[in-house]
Length: 328
Image (cartoon, rainbow, N blue to C red; front, top):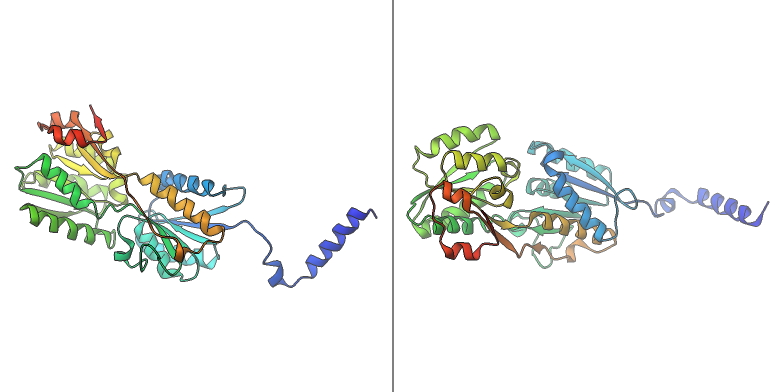
């Protein structure tokens, strides 16, 4: 037997003789659990941004990392069982793509690291103890869309200073987020002497009835809340606001591209990319308790002047001058 073949036989025999606990310590491809309340079609662009962040940290899916996806298809009550399944499979990290998913993962484990992407202050949600030193097994990224919801009301009121009644569109199924957004907006509205009506919708099927009632309710402006439902229906919402003549503001630029009037929010894809990068750092051995929660710092204002003209609104130069993008 050649010397090289002899060495292979000896090493192989030795490894086979190791106890299972020792063999389990040998390097293996880590598995990341990805939990989201969206459907695969709705969430794929965000998952792709997450994978870009992973790759920037040195992890390429199919080469040195595997991702186990769990999509609840807007059925929030499925998330706890999905999170429990990922824990049972002993994934290395659980990454969550929505606030309900983050809360489900938190309830499922206190040991497996969790990286979240959420739309509000995670301290208020009870996910972390402190933004700078999260503690425990959880950290992540917040795009702060709840905290900027009053700013969107302010922008719409600046554009429509004579309007006294506005509406806030929310999905009550977004546990925690809907209540926080309502609280923030109603407080800001009182300071400005505006009446805000909170309108709840649970699916796209509710949109027609809600918009049909806006005129009867004397609503002169609409703030569209955050959440997966309103992201998925962004084009439908834009069309409805124009059809019913309701000036509206959304979080995402896609609303204005589809014909909506205003949008103001952070770059959501950057948030998911950062979450992917944090996941990679944890896979390399960093402690989530010591990774500060990353917060969105750049918010973009987009205005569709064509829609403003259609709605008979003269946009002041003060607002146009502050816009990051003007669609004509």
